[in-house]
Image (cartoon, rainbow, N blue to C red; front, side, top):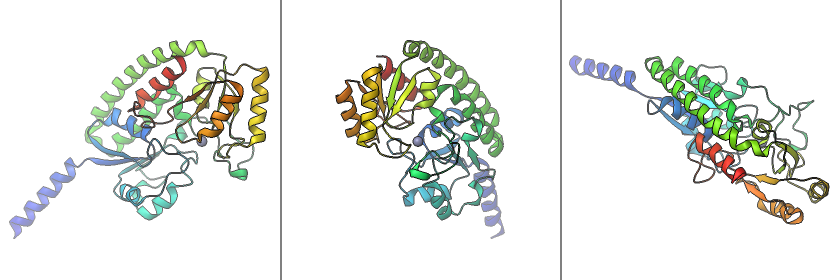
Length: 295
Ligand SMILES: [Zn+2]
């Protein structure tokens, strides 16, 4: 009996030493960055699907199970998850991954955000009460997120830290090569005007000096009204607007209405990894946005 329990003890220690940590991310783009750094050394899954509205992820029991078993939770932050993540965390009852704990990382703390309202309020249903949370659509910001993820993985999984460090270095190199390519292609759009459905691509447009001349939503998260669309149509009569940007989860009718009335082409952009079949990772997310704008 003693031999058997010793055997189980040794087996237990062996399994613990070799067990992979479970990483849960709120969005697929974060999962993709984790995979670049950790490869197959961790289990990683995303709560949201890339095709869903990131502000309102449906609360499914499977998401609670993922959170219950997580060693590390990485979120986008800035209240984009406020409408759906807290109830899931409560049900998961996992003290390791709560804000402030070692198993928690909020990527929004790395950056200065744009469009911070003067007064923090959810009046009118504004879904960006602390500023624009879609900062990850600026490709220049990705390496900083990768570095923060590497640091967190090193802290939680010290035995693989040098592996994560090596992967970060090669990721940074490869990312910079891609950036050079994207920057070159995007040059020709500098100074152009765009309409967009939601304030989703503002960080991308800001990076490449594209001016957001108006949004179909009168406020972030508020559906377009006829009077608001008429204002955009009026604007387009006296200004050149190059395209209308929208995401897979945005209603198409107001986009098509505006496009038809103004003759401005509407372009569907991927807003996250897996939002379109060809967007399989963090690289192809930007490859596809740039391709749709420049080809
Ligand atoms: Zn938003």
